[in-house]
Image 1 (cartoon, rainbow, N blue to C red):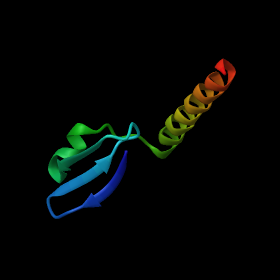
Image 2: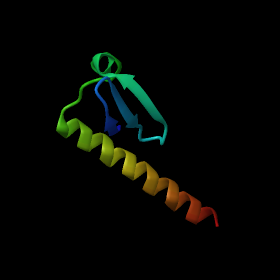
Image 3: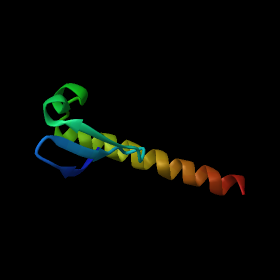
Length: 62
């Protein structure tokens, strides 16, 4: 998730799947699971690996 904008009462965000959303600041902690930086990097690496494998499979099919 990437926070794209913050107002006085709301947080606007874009998820890794491209979907956007808005949530009140008070609800943010309830809706999203807290992860540490190391876990975030692992998730990001796994996501990049999935994208790379998908690209290689598409090339192989051609």
